[in-house]
Amino acid sequence: MKILLVSPPIYDFAAYDFWMKPLGILYISSILKEKGHKVYLIDATNRFDSYYSEVKSDRFGRGKINAKTVLKPEILKGIPRRYRRYGLPRKIIIKKIKEFDPEVVMVSCTMTYWYPGVVEIKKILDSLPIKPTLLLGGIYPRLLPIHANSLGFDRVYTGSGGFIDEIGVEIPDDFSRFPPPDYSHYENLEYAAIATSLGCPFFCPYCASPNLYGKKQNKEAEQVIEEIEYLYKKEIHKFAFYDDALLITEDRFVNLCQKIKERGISANFFTPNGLHSRFLTREVAQWMHKVGFKEPRISLETTDEDLQKRFSIKTTNGEFIRAVENLSTTGYNKKHIYTYLLAGLPQFSFPSVRKSILDVARIGVKVSLAEFSPIPGTPMEQELPDPLLTNNTAFYYYKGMGKEMERIKQLVKWANKGIDLGISIKEIKDYL
Image (cartoon, rainbow, N blue to C red):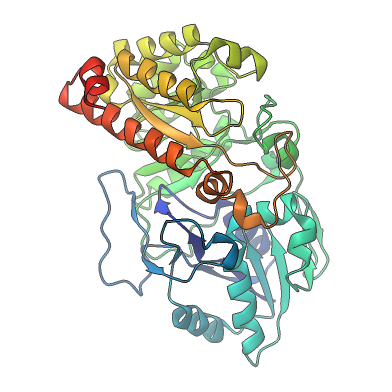
């Protein structure tokens, strides 16, 4: 059977290729191919698609996604930011669909507020003379099944595993049974996203991971190293781990690093989802440095100890400081260490966020702001008139907090710039 997998264009106020790959459907592709199906992928946000004549990336493989300003939906009209469509032009997507002529189209969507891209793909398919079976899956329909079912697909899959009746294929509900992700669809590949596990053992009230994955599921280190080595032999030397809790079992992580070293793999590794500082021991930091982890990112959320206790946040200030010390004494320059702080949570006042930013900057590491949005199905979800408002930018303006958030973002920029230039936090505060 000819099956087309689609990762749609993104409609958003901002989007960036921060090691962005549709990892879920790359796993699905491998599973389908194992069953003998002919599979084709349209990754609409692939910057390296042959359609583009020139692609610019930073030294770690990240870069801007081709974008075009579009009209904002009515509910977003009051937000003073440009709304853009990120990805391949519609005519190129149509051309690719016609060339493959699929019998089944499986569309995947991650963010709940990215559903306009799904709507676009559905309209394209409805306009064509071909009439394939249309299936929808991904995180968006799992979090918002009723909304996803309203889009008119033949079937919406809202679970993490199970049998896909339309094609007669079972998706394992155990991550250790997943084959490697299928990167054969990419002619030009500057980096690869991989995962050693799904889920997280913590239950942060603002995070959807427990609802999406249940208990944490791991692949063995040997499985992961084989995936890395296979891609490495194809000249891929940059890898982003998508794990929510990469360091949760120290022995397992150290074992993986040892295997990377033993196989002679000289690559750069990244942790865009953040690392738990509690588990960032001296030995872990040493192995990270040995095998090539770059720009380590640590999750902290806030330096307010009362908020840490109230929200069962998975670290303390002391653990965070020890993690930074372990990294810096191992050989990492503090200027290249980033800390995730959470902004916009209703209980986190902006003065509290401001203090957290300055607390982190005083230690000499940079801040990466994680903007809260009310994810459906979590204890902190909110009733909103449209999923578009779960977009963090939209949410703050909808709640009348847009200007405060912009000031917080400006403070982060100045604090990080100050660290680069060696300017003291006192001088930055006086300037502001």
